[in-house]
Amino acid sequence: MKSRIRKIVTFFEETRSEMGKPVNPPTRRAAAAAVIENPCAGKYVEDLSELMEMGEELGSLLTERAVAALGIPGPSAESYGKAAAVGENGELEHAAAILHPKLGTPVRKVLGKGAALIPSSKKRGGPGVSLDIPLGHKDAAFVRSHFDGMEIRVNDAPRANEILVAIAVTDSGRPLPRVGGLTKDQIKGEDGLR
Amino acid sequence: MPEVELRKRIIVVEEIFHEGGPAARKPLRRAAALAVIRNPFAGRYVEQIAGFMEDLNPLGLDMAKALVAALGGDPKAVEGYGKGAIVGQAGELEHGALWHVPGGYAMREVLGGAKAIVASTKKVGGPGTRLDVPVTHVNASYVRSHFDAMEVGIADAPRADEILLALVMTTGPRVHARVGGLKASEIKGEDGLR
Image 1 (tube, each protein chain N blue to C red):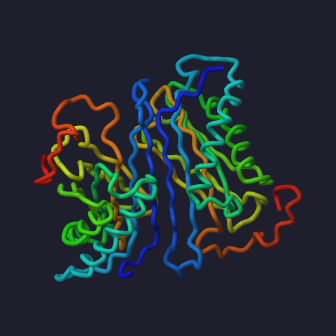
Image 2 (image 1 turned 135 degrees about the vertical axis):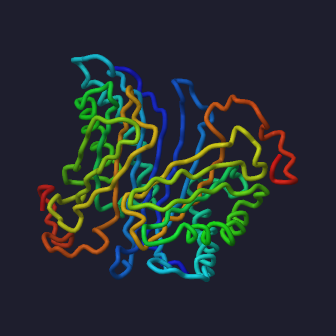
Image 3 (image 1 turned 90 degrees about the vertical axis):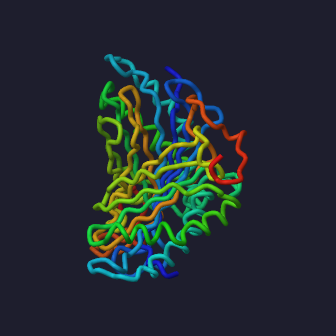
């Protein structure tokens, strides 16, 4: 592997009730996060292709971990999202290099499909900084019941020369969705939007 | 005693390859099982609460089994453990103490006769409160390489009338343990201490 990984953390959440009302079946989401060394930390590096390649390998590794935590086959996933937090000696652009050019293709390969844009967020921060990973339906970004987010954090990462990279996958939308909009049974799945 | 009402479950698994030193031959794994339940005693002083401990036994067993599964399924691979609770602000610290017996019983049951006391901590807090769950060796509390801790928490829990229950298991010593003391290989295993 190109990425020098210090740590991998997986998170699995299952919500069974909201305000005392059962959520049946429970909504489930998972995230996998890798803490990697930032090879570009502490200096200005013009060419970020090394980070882009690391994004590619993390795309498959983290998606596989998240899907395994859900215990579902990849194609049963419903929504996804990605995010990165760069340690203080790095640049926001380093997160962009990992997340945007090459990470998406292997994610979609694991999930079978994924016509929609993978929603993302990024920030710079210290150890324990929280990442709110945005979530959207993987085949139709406008499915309103699946607009969501998942907060994760790793208490000892990112250190100054590290990057925390995370991918979240769900097999469901929000618990008890009831604000209307496009529903998943109405997905046409042609343009990734509706 | 009242029924256990579960709102949410979370499993977090950390896989630690190194912490700046040589990569471990076998990465250290730590896992936490978190459950958010309604606090049946919130908002008032209730004298008789001890009966609720027994009601928590099945949940404890579920959580302990989920942890072993998250660490690969072999109870023998588990070398360290700990437990903790965060009581929402309408509750009492004493409500967190209800977790001592069922949490400890569950892990011993699933691990098949662990001898050491289960390290623990607890506090009252709001949503997002973090808890550093202490971890020690399952058979001998004085094994220095296994003194560890895992930070856990949930962004939206505990609400005022909830309790967040935590169990933690680990698969080995700190990743670069090197400060001496009793070693796991020197355990006599008679008193749970050495």
